[in-house]
Length: 225
Image (cartoon, rainbow, N blue to C red; front, side, top):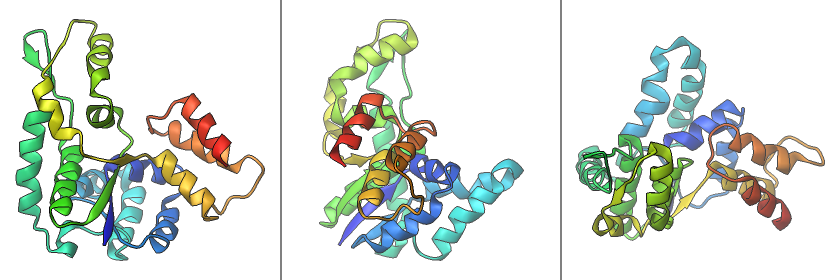
C-alpha cells in the first residue's frame, strides 16, 4: 500500500487549469490511494460551495470524492480525530519556529499541517506516502530549513530568529508539487492536449496558478524529457 496526500494547493491548481480529470488518469496508474484530509476538503469543497464564483470547481472536486478518486482518512480506518490531534501538535511546533518583532510568526495553516499529520499516521502504519503541496514555506521547512531565516527576513523586512530545535520535526516528510505531477502525467502519456510545446505549456501553467517552482526548475524538467 502507498498513498499520495493532497494539500488544497495542487487540487486548486489542477482545477484552475482545467486538469481535474487528469487526477482520474493519474489515480488509475497509481497503485495506491489519493487522500485528502477533512481540513483540505473544507478548503476545496465545503467553503467554496458557499461562494458562487468557486462553486462549480468545488462541485467537480466533490465528484472526485464521490467517485473515490480522492478519499478521506476513514477509508484506511484512520479517524479524523487522530488527524486533528496530531495536526494541532504540529501547528504549535511549526508556528514557534520563526520569531520576529517580539512575536512568533504563523507559518503554516490547518490544511497543510493536517497533511503532515496524516503522513505521520500513515508512516506509523508502514504505508509509504508523499505529500502533494505547492506552498513554498512548508516544503522549505522540511527540505531546506537553513533558508528560512533569509526568506522571512526579506519577507518581513526585519531581523528574525529561528528556533532550530523545532525544525527536526519536519525533516522526514517528502513532497511533490503540481509541476512534478504534470511531468509524471506527461511521461505516462496522460495529457490529452497535443502539440510540440505541450510539456512546457503545462509546466508553466502550474507555476502561474500557484506552484512554487522556479523558471530554472522548469527548464531542468524540460531537459529530462
